[in-house]
Image (cartoon, rainbow, N blue to C red; front, side, top):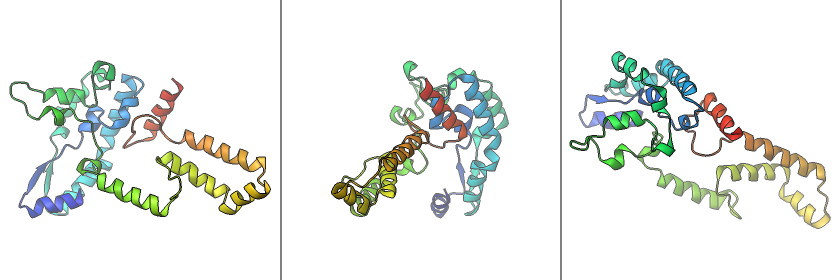
Length: 229
């Protein structure tokens, strides 16, 4: 946002409209799809809104003000906040079975067939993290190149979890240990049991299923709840 503000200011723009608050008001963060019920979702949105001034708004204000750029936040108008928080939280729940995605109420408000505000493919596209929204294929390419040339070039892991397990394995079983295992069968059952235990508990720390971007402690709690179900 800091670099983007510098670019915008260089174009002669003095004021921008920012969507700060929309995700907090309408449960837009990707981890909200794990909310077990509407009561939990509402409590989390309230908590996020109350903390906005400590994090997101503070960051946005500093990033834009550093370049003399004014950011206005229509979603944080007091009357709009009151209206948004009075909506039944059920309508903010992500319900794939009903065709409802994140920020469904807000998207539908802009879905005008006669005078469309936005093209459908933009209006109903999945939310992206700030960095992802500007494109990340080149980052993936660099990561793949680095991984294939410098980290585990043989049987390169394809996921973050696989990388973690591979690093655990490398930490407990060095190349020398592996050589000794195949030549002298010197590795003990204790080493293997310890490694398996490490992997078992490591799995519990990795949220599963769809992304939990912008995660909080509540997101991890909801993830654990959904796993039990």
